[in-house]
Length: 351
Ligand code: NAD
Ligand code: DAU
Image 1 (tube, rainbow, N blue to C red):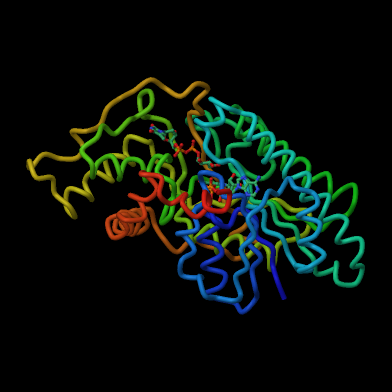
Image 2 (image 1 turned 180 degrees about the horizontal axis):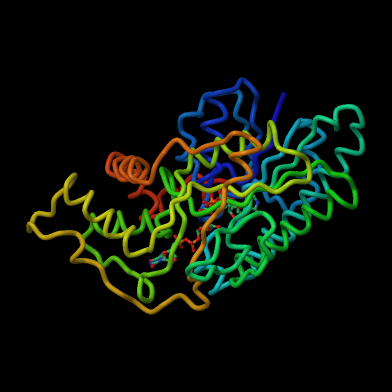
């Protein structure tokens, strides 16, 4: 048996592929375009593992995805592939529409064609679409956390593109009976996260004595989940989720950004004290706010807990410590990302 994972060289996708192959004999076809966010160094452990088949390509390439379905006949698709960074979507939304919306559409069409030709097998087939809590918009301070029935109110080009893809997935279930599942998760953190996102950026800047930029007043709230807990939840939804349903995933871990940054600083103060004896917190710098910055996200994870019995294993305290330790122990991974040499493999392909 085989599953098709898209975006499996990115942050969450690579953690998912590593976790999947650590627990299962089932092969993974990993389709990833290797944009700036895709990094084959994340998958070094699988270099000689025949269960991992890497294909560099675009989910929006109809011919390629149709061929992959026909060749590998996956029993499931897990769609991680996306442009994922909100700030980049503000400066250049086009790639977000192309991949997140049109790419997902192309993948859905190919899945529909495949499911139609495999009538008996298709009762087993699943298309799991990985999405975000950002589609629900911004919560007022005292409002209850997002449940699966909240209205979609996306505010950034990124969240609008993800919202559009979620709607397409829903439509393919209702119109064509494609066996889909959708997950909407809160902010992830952990190993292999690209150092443009808040937590790895702050760790990297702190270790290099650079300013730690906090947008606006730093009182925006995000709800943090350790990445392998997200992977476990996706696996659970894939195995036990009800077709056509949406599952919100989160760890009940709301924190203001400033608190996250202060926590990172105090852990680093203990693990890697600065030479001058000052706290890393002295590097905190308030900068211009992100346009349209959502004030608060929070996930109500009751449904997945109640219906599928999923619970996160990490608390924020254990997860953030593990994450900081990982970045300290894997400075060469970070260095290659920052100096661009992690792209060498990709550039050679096109030389
Ligand atoms: P990421 O940016 O780290 O990785 C995205 C991966 O997709 C990269 O490997 C990239 O090369 C690949 N990709 C981009 N465009 C592609 C295309 N057209 N075809 C094939 N591959 C392509 O993203 P991430 O943080 O790992 O997020 C993965 C998914 O999870 C996304 O769909 C995102 O919306 C969702 N999500 C992320 C978070 C989070 O906190 N990071 C939270 C909830 C949901
Ligand atoms: O909520 C899930 C989403 O979480 C995912 O769908 C996105 O793919 C993922 O990128 C993430 O989006 P955010 O915009 O919340 O993550 P980011 O790490 O960019 O920012 C987290 C918070 O920190 C946000 O309120 C903006 C703020 N921030 C971010 C950066 C990069 C800063 O204050 N300073 C910074 O330098």
